[in-house]
Every structure is written in structure tokens, then in C-alpha cells.
Image (cartoon, rainbow, N blue to C red; front, side):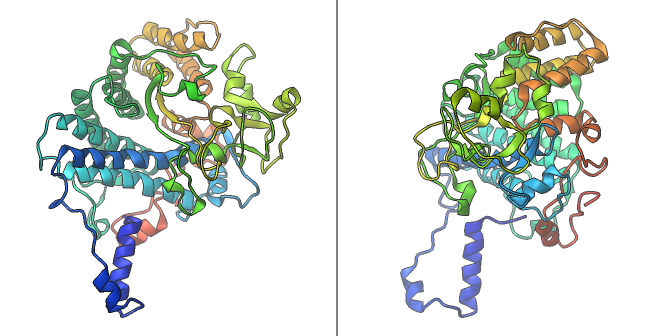
Length: 487
């Protein structure tokens, strides 16, 4: 397990001092050690609340999950400036990635950082009592489940340590738990969150009962536990305060945290960032990365032209479907309409992910790194489609499945469907692709439904369903962890 950078620097400094390098005794006299431990923390509600903010904060670093979830699929290509621009993206696009890939390292590191921060709260959950503490613990468990679900999707079996933080040496003694055990912890965490949270959050952006139920239903669906998936998801539909919103404004700032939002990762453009610490950004780095290269024109800001939708992805929409040009921007048509100019980057397709294009704003610092666009992690439309899938694939109720599916189709200006059985399944799969294109779900939908090999160029069955454990993690474990098959 990688340790965080501040702890690493502290250990490195200790080693340098012990070897007599560079630091004077005067420096040591003037330096006070700063230490937060269980002895001087978690003594008040404020301590628990501040620690919880720290767990939420790491969500902003998961933008790379979204980018790669599309680039790995048949929806988009890597893009960028050249074949060597963010080489990790290029490798994932070609399905040539190996255990040495900085961007896959980021997925591992940042999601485990989220688990670690949640575990810090849970390790000391019984230290201090105050009114409302159960809700903070429930949010911590929701967030741990969120990060763990991402990790198990990407990497398969994971090391687990219960409600305790990982420490140096654990990687040599704690095994990677089977996927079934990982999901069992996710389910337990989310059920606790369901039981202790309300549908209305105390602050915008915090987890709710609806978010916990939706993620629980998704976790069940990924395991093909269709009956409990349908139960959890229909509870969100029947009891939650959600509804479909206006798709025209859904991905604009006015559409953030609206009636369709079940859970969003919150971003702001008020604090600058730099490439030396992308995870430090309070803005959505993925948005600038997906921007139009050398763009000059109305509405949008320029960016780095990564994650380019393919012609095939654009063509899956009928002309009647209002989502077509609201989801994917035909840059040539846009330039002809508005007089905008742009440059073609690597693997230029003529299309951009309009949902997450950088829009004109007053963000601070490097505009490409501090975009304020929230990531719509769980939308009500996704809940409707997951519920439809669970009801249909579980042989539970095709009538209700069609009803949920048709709600999404009606908003898109499409005719309702009345088919059943496998024909309905195929339409649900197709509708998921159209509704959620550009949002990071496609690769995992293809994998979990067994369609990845036929859809993704270069995909090897028995290997590419999951990604390699970063090489340094395997080396740190000193033989305790085996690499994923095929890598």
C-alpha cells in the first residue's frame, strides 16, 4: 500500500537525519513536530465533521476514473496532442496497458486514500459521543463504500482491514480479499448508511439515504443479484425526492444538484491548481482535459482534446433524440454555425464530450485545471435504467421495467417500447449507452454484461475485465499479492 506524500516526506526526513545529511541541530531546535493522533483528536463533533470533510475532499481526485471509464470503452478515443501525450491514457485506449501506468496508479492511490480517510473516522467512531454522530459515521461508511466500489470495479480482489487504517507493513501480511468479500463490506456499509441517513442532506453535496440505496442497488446489479438490486432501486424511485429534469440544461451550472441529482462530486473554480499536484485541485480536471483544442468562440473555453467521442457513438442516436447534440458536440457543425475556430489534435474524430466541456467562467489559476463543473456520479435517469435492468434480467416484472425505461425515452423524445424478455434487455443496454455516454460508465457496463470483447478493439477476455495492480504495490507486498491474470 502506498503511503501518503506527507508521511513519506516525514519518514524520508527521519532517514536523512539519522544518516547525518543536511539538517543542522539549530533547525531541529526550532522545529516542532506536528502530530494528529487518537490521543488529541476526535474529542468533539467538530473533529469528526472536519475529518469527514477530508473524506469528501478526495472525491475530487476521482476525475481520472471518469475519463478512463470512457477511453477504455468503445465510446471514445484517447485524443490529446500526440501519441505520447499522457501515455497512460493512450495505453488504456489501445488495451496495451501494463502494471506500469501512472494514470492507473492514480485510480489505485486516490481511491485507497479515500478508504484510508474514511477508516480514520471509523477507527475512532466510539471515542466521543454527541447528538447526530450516527449520521457522520453513516456518511463515512457511504464514502468508504463509494471508493471501495470503484476499486473493485477496476482491480478485482482488494486488501481489507475493517474499521482500521492501513499501516506500513500491512501490504506484506494482509491478503487481497475475494471480490465476494469486498462486495459484502460494500453492502454492509451502504445498508448502515441507508438505515441512518435521510433523503435530504444537511448540506448540498453530502450523501443521503437515496444515494446509499442507489449505490447499493448498483453494487447488487454488478453482482447480478437482481432481486435485491430491484428492491433497493425501486425504493429510490418510490420514496425519494427525485425526478427527471430538463436535459437541455442538465449539464450546465444551472443543472447542478437539481431534482435529478442523486449524488454529485462537488467542484469549484475558486482555487487555482497546477500540474505538479493535480489531486490538489478543487476544480474538475477532467473537464479541461476534454476541452476543444485551441478553441476560440462562444460558450466554451479551450482545453486539451482528450476523451473524444467516436463517429459510432454519435451515430447511435436517432435524429429525433434530443440527447444527440446535447451530449456530443459536432465541432465542424458548431464552427460553421458560430464561426468558432479550433485545432485538430491526436486521433481527432470531429466530436467532443459536450456534457463535460469547459464553459466560460471566472475560474482561478490555470483554467484548464480548475473547472467548476460537478460530476453527476449518480443521476435519477441511471437509477431508472438500473431498476429496469434488474426487473427485466431478474425475470421480476417486465411491465414495470418498460415503464421505467420509457420515462427516460420520453424525455429524449423517443417512442415508448412494449417488448419483453431479451428484446427488452437489449433496448435497456442501448438506452444506457445513449443516456450515459461520456459519464464514465460504459466500460464497466460492457464488462459486467459480457459484451466487452466484441465491442472494444484489443480487449482480451480473461484479462482486460480488470486492470493491473500497480507494479510498485506488487513489489511492496514482497510476494503477498499476486498480479491480476494476464499482466
